[in-house]
Length: 227
Image (cartoon, rainbow, N blue to C red; front, side, top):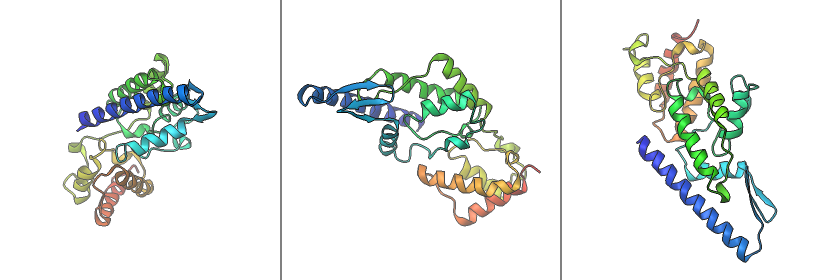
């Protein structure tokens, strides 16, 4: 499933890049449009296709494949160099990823795929031209993601593992990521977190919890939360 998703994204990226290159060449030759590739997109007849347009286009191209993301002000340690680099580069093509989307063990392969795509797209020209981070910047971004990554718990280590709440938690929440340790939040914070995850599941086309399931999962997490 993951391999097919990566292949689909790669094919779409290549096709769009080729269309952008061919289209911009034709427009430049026959209609007198000024086409100037830039770090944020391209200049076409004085109008910049900035990262906002590119981000919106990518979201429309891959509905249900990209998570909703978070706002910059909600990033942990938002004034750090890692947070600023993450925003600068990752916000070019999709919504800003939360470091808590993956564990520290998962982030190197996930970030590696993203860096490879940025490297490929940065050399394609046309409407998909984007900035590619340097080697040092990649290390800073990865270190930031790992530092603020999801603190997971093994399914077998869950407290009260046979309770209905724990079983629902394992089945539903593992659709998108490793299971978060119930103790990463205090009890009063879990309802809002579960609601946010419900919205993410809807956006990603995953199985969405029923009201009864949500109540059971929320109650379980609150009961096992950090005291």
